[in-house]
Length: 353
Image 1 (cartoon, rainbow, N blue to C red):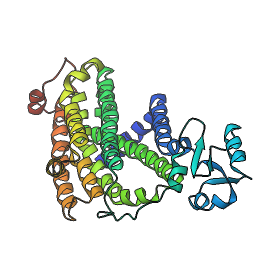
Image 2 (image 1 turned 135 degrees about the horizontal axis):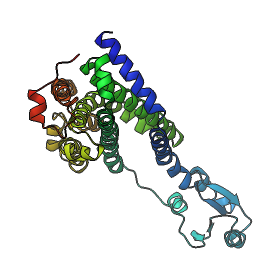
Image 3 (image 1 turned 180 degrees about the horizontal axis):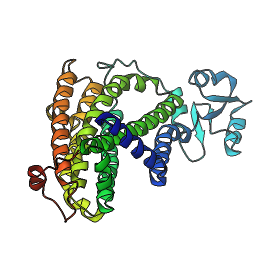
């Protein structure tokens, strides 16, 4: 069995085990429900246009505004319709708007004289969207890399703790074992994100957010390769961290540098997304570029060549961390006499397989 075949075998095994894991399935369902709720519920809860009672002579502007108009004989009948709860508001002579306990803003707007508005920057991103989009990109990368990274580390420790790893390395090369785990984690992470993205797009279509989807398209397209390389970089660190210990309880102690490498860029992108200089720097740093560069593409702040340079730097960093993680993994995988230091694992790499 060559290395490629062994890698496929290990990856297939890891994927099968994870797809039978109830926790993984429940968490995926939870994320799908959250994505659906975040996109579908707001338009449902906002309600439809107000229903208005009005005489036929004054119904024109209200119909033009898309309101539900109910014509009545006179102002007294209009007021009575409001009191009976048949309509949300009524327009009577004056004109005046009648309502029970809440001013109907859409009715008031329809009756108001609106001045001409000229937008000097019509393509500017809405401030709310400008906050939510970087949060979404950063949150997806942060949560996915943390969740699947921890699972990779736990899988490595479990195999060491039960001594199953000794049987595995006798059948497959050590690097194939590591590669299989990374491939499986990447496939599962991308699959989960693809499902969440599909539900989100469907929900946004339901909410009539086609304009936002058009703006997000290029950023999402670039987010995929950035996410892939960034996840591989982080996953290699998690696998190496898991190989350094022999008990599940010790993972937290060795994984602090990995968690900081994920958490600090997450908060940096969230809090500095409106700082052009900071975002430009973050878009070239390997641990923050998977979220910072797609965000700059969304806001239109990045030149056409910048994502290519950033992706090349991330590729070099990912390859470096994969090689370093593989060396630490090989040097500590068969050590079962307590926690192994990175220096010891680096110097005494196992040469089996």
